[in-house]
Image (cartoon, rainbow, N blue to C red):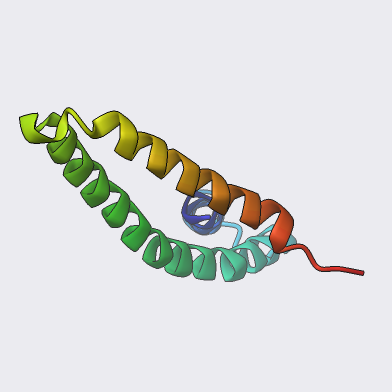
Length: 101
């Protein structure tokens, strides 16, 4: 969404600055695209930043735990437990959240 919003915003700038076609139907079309593109840029980046930060932090912490020597004997069991938990959530997201007719 952020890339699409930026693309629409840049298209308007190209029409206004490079092509110098302000006030034409082409410019009107780019204004509509820019009206859609601005909220795309403003909302998607704000929404994605926490997800990216959490994923990075969790990955770093998981690697630190997995590398430690004290964790190695139980690592396969913890991995299997996390896999089962993840599969339960995947199953729930596909089958338990459906809207019944």
